[in-house]
Image 1 (cartoon, rainbow, N blue to C red):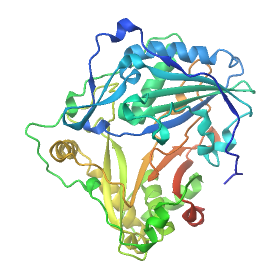
Image 2 (image 1 turned 90 degrees about the vertical axis):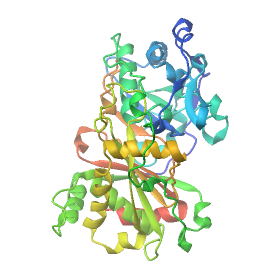
Image 3 (image 1 turned 30 degrees about the vertical axis):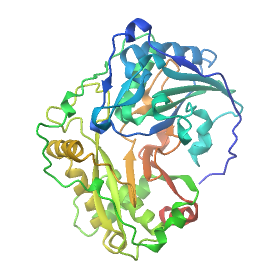
Image 4 (image 1 turned 90 degrees about the horizontal axis):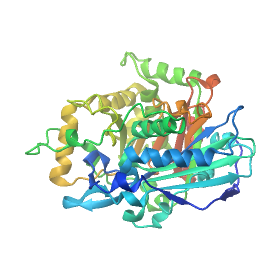
Length: 437
């Protein structure tokens, strides 16, 4: 699993500066209203690594900062701040407050070994502007913070801290790619669409499906008591190569119940079972919830517009007793994952939006595992003028219940998967023993 690293990685941080679009570009802008799917109040921190044999890193900071100002002409909501409008709905205003940009130097040569063990040790590569730890009230938190950190080897890292209210991974990828096009002197190939009308609630609202993501699960297990919930959370990275993933797929289909399953489906089921065992829930009637974000851009009728600026994801959800996860065939758990994803349709999403409009329902994360995958988002095909990114990875999990899948960096690892997990300190060793294949 790699060697442990010290917490202080000796980053020399420069003075943060505010980057805003030109004043003439923002003075006519009003409030940018968010859809219900955008009500995800957390920030996602990640890094992109770059290194070129032909171009050094001396001008990297200036290139990124200049291109960011031009980017915000089109993506001006990222220069604003969150506010609350009628009916407790989130919106964005105050575009002149800008995004935050900072340059830094790193005393070490590279970060790739840290990525293989515990990316949270690299948190100093992503300046967060006082967002985390509730250091600032929500209306003062920047929606985009960027940090360019240069290395002695000539490479550098772009670290970003982006509000999930502004979009999901697909939105962020399009935004970063547009930023990169500007940095290379090109026009933006996919302009952002700020039209939210396709995700408005119906009139009158109509709830047609059950929505278990809002179900609050009661604690029925002494092993998941407040003692564990108060523990320090630890973060680990786990690597699954092509051979181990192939074994999981074979196991899922060995009894003939399933005719096929994807890497995501079988790996999600495997991690869900192992996590429940690590939390010592398997011999109880304790229910556990699985939530999986599903991209609905093409599922909607009509589809969301190209370049949609916002979240185009809806959470698929299923609930099971933990002891059933332990005792039922593996194919049963994989089937639960498959069935939950199949339930996400245009009609289901419309019902979800209307449910929130009527009841202001909030997703509950009690006894929940939230799994998201970045493996289908080509984050590493981003070229700011130094070639494609040589690696990309999350730094911390937006919520501790989240598990992130992302592809292993490097062509020699094609088909491998990396899993980023947070668990209470006393349970991580058990989980590690369960998933090591």
